[in-house]
Amino acid sequence: ISLTKCRNQHSRYQSVLQSLLPQPLLSLPPLEDHPDCPFVEDVVVVADGVACITNPGHASRRGREVDTVKTALLNDDRLEGHFVEGETLFDMRRDGDDPMATADGGDVLYTGRHFFVGLSDRTNERGWEVLRSVFGSRLRREDVDDDDEVVVAVPPVIRGKSVLHLKSAVTHLDPHTLLAPEGPIGDEVLTAMKAEERGYVAIRLKDVLTCNAVVVNGHVMVQDSGCEVSKERIVGACVERGLGWTFVDTGELAKKDAALTCCSVLLEC
Image (cartoon, rainbow, N blue to C red):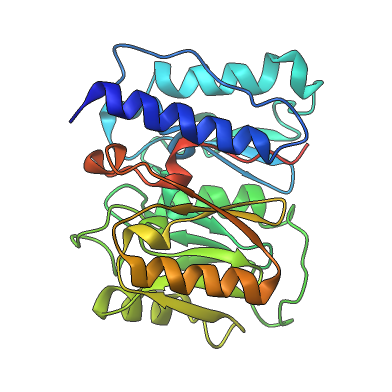
């Protein structure tokens, strides 16, 4: 792995993201003793203006890496005091009252309709229960059947597979469109999510890496992978839906299981 290339790719990622945001990007200083610190997605989940600090599934991710993000959300002046502990910010390590609860934000996919929590090697059922207690009554309920849940646990079909998190295999373009890989992994994840039953259309891509995309204000950050077929399909889907797109290469970071969503958390304040 080239550290120089990783830094250059991360810098480009931040530049593209900032160009899509009306507010300044909140960028945290590096934690040299925590090499996973760029992957901020895993330590906090934010949806509809509510945040939950997680208890990451791997012990090396806990502690300072999590506390740094929590402190920024509570104290950074640019957030104008939006996050208040016990009101709009919760901490799984305390509020869940269950030290065995673990969750990585990479296992949480909020489409604007459903809040999917993938059970995996990093996120357990106790972690899902904490997330359900935090978000279940606080998320808006739009275009969801009366007998359906908004916070949905996805069975651990990816556990032990070639993908680490739920969002390593599936993300969304809009509230009705998912991106998922062709083949058994994509089939199993979409079936476990009951995607078709819940009114989702799935764009199936040739490679897994391109399935991880970031949507910001009607614009899609697309992985600049080597798979031209996947890139053509996702661009076609963006054109059909009136979405803009930009290709961003984080291939060097991907060597350590990082994808586009891993390196940012979108805040709605």
